[in-house]
Length: 178
Image 1 (cartoon, rainbow, N blue to C red):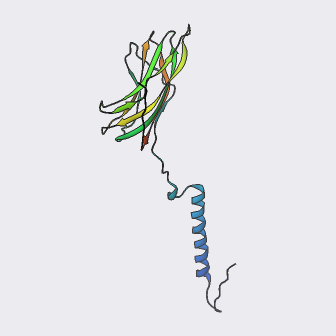
Image 2 (tube, helix red, strand yellow; image 1 turned 120 degrees about the vertical axis):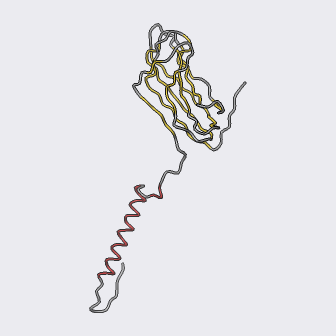
Image 3 (cartoon, one colour; image 1 turned 90 degrees about the horizontal axis):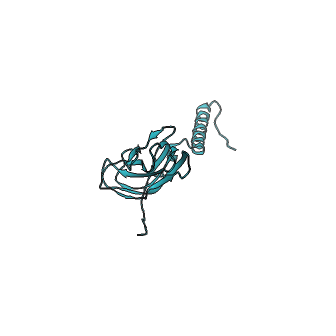
């Protein structure tokens, strides 16, 4: 409860307008905070770079020749967690398709193995190839390049869709068995 005291003949409307305006401004701030519309609630997590495509049908080269399926935007120097998946149509009978990634400069360090999709059926089928790992980008203007190849078996597989993302990480511990 609030009350105002004023003398007879004094106009209280300017004071009343100030209270109403202040109340409306406070309500707007509260509404922005609750709904996330305020600038104080901007995203503070790491940037994730995502590349994805669907219904593309990119023919994959045979004889272990790498076909570029996608590439990232230019990545700043640093360490990135990388996740990628390619889905294949017309995975020919007896074929093995590999997928992986490289960078546009040989001075980077990549820690991730190949993924593969095999078809041991008597007819063409579908399949997916997934690779996860760490990429240390050591050069300015580098991109991460997602590739696939028919490693063995007959030609014919096509990359129908893919997804690849790169997330900067502060620390990465790489452990592998040799």
